[in-house]
Image (cartoon, rainbow, N blue to C red; front, side, top):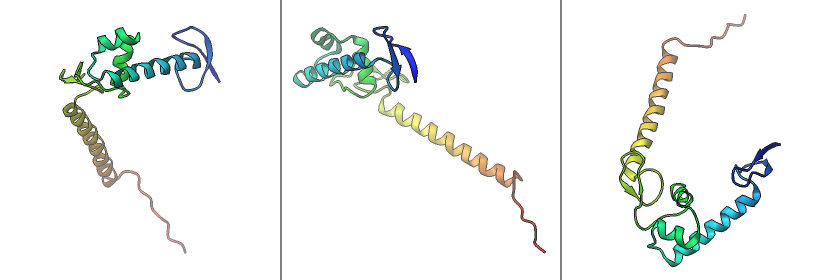
Amino acid sequence: MEMANCPRCRKVFPRLREPICDACVKEEEELFNKVKAFLEENPSSTVLKICDETGASHKRITQWVRDGRLELQKAELQCRQCGKDIASGTYCKDCFDKINQQIGDMFSDKAKDEALEGKKGGATMHTRDRR
C-alpha cells in the first residue's frame, strides 16, 4: 500500500484511488453538492456568483465543468482548441469531433501499415510435412 501526503491538508494517508485523503474527498463532495443545489435553484448563475454564494473556488468550479460534472447555462469557458465559448467540457463539439476523427484515422493508418507489413514478408509460420 502506497502512502502519500494529501496535497490539501498535508496528512499522510494510504493512497488507494484518490489523490487526496478521505476527509478531503468528503469535504470536496459536500462542496460539490452545495454548488449543485445552488445551481438547481439558480440555473442561470455565473461562475463568479456561484463562487460568492457557495464559497467554492473559481478553479474548482471550472474543473467540475471541464470534467462534465456541472454544466453552465451560459457559455463561460473556452474550447482549448479553437477558443469558442462552451458551457461544459474541454472542447467544443466541432473540435471534439475533429479530434476523434484524427484519432480514428491514426488507428486506421496503423492497422493498414500492420496489414501491409504482414503481406511484405514479415514473420510467417510454416508447417513441416510429416513423413
